[in-house]
Image 1 (cartoon, rainbow, N blue to C red):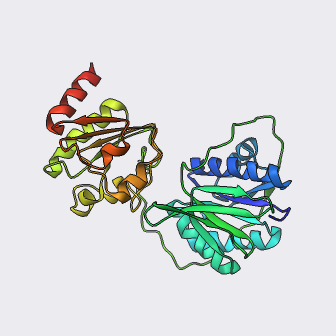
Image 2 (spheres, helix red, strand yellow):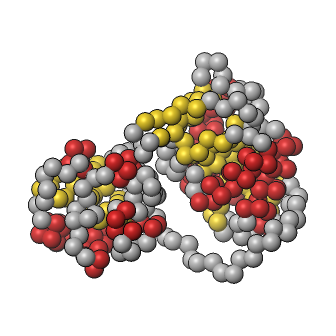
Length: 322
């Protein structure tokens, strides 16, 4: 890598920084220290200036702040235009985004505008002996890892949530906060409404209780919800349940849904398709409950319970509630 800035796009909503931004800062700080580079952040939004100092405390050397009412609601075209202008000005060698809905909407547009390559859904970034940046991402439903080197500049990547570790906060760190003027862009997009933020998502949950094809009917997801509540977790589901309309897509666990990395994963009637196993393989402790002892999930489970979920789960809930 060249001895230039590593720039991190900071995702936020309502002034609250998404945890993935701190994870990117942790990796950016690590890469910068190895290559004698600096870490910069791009923070766009309305009323977001107050978050800039905390980004420095988490590892940034410089924070570029675009604080303007026109950026109050995420608009990929407006955000793209302002971010591209900044990148052309400071010319970083690496640009990092979270592989979130926002990052996936923004990063390709920025890459296209800069005629740069983009490696998506990375799970690891490593500096090689020659100074190049190796980008690691799953391929073929997570059965293989692709190792990518990018020739175009800047090197642009999106990184999966919870694939990296955030750096510890250091309130003694010093850095520079630079206020930037926002470029007014008429994107033609009109926001008609906006739903409330979800308090808990499966991507960031420490406990995920996932229902699978072993459930007989949609109403039986209530049993999964009761177990999740007893464990202080959230409800997940396999793809067939989502495809059948039993539960919304944002609950789908797996490579084609959401990759999860909880401290505890509990599969209730989950057989364990390859794409589902690829989405839970980094879980801390995996518990599988199924009446069929031959299911694939048992092969990777830390604890395998062979039994009828309609008998086992209520007993678990009863014991947990005590």
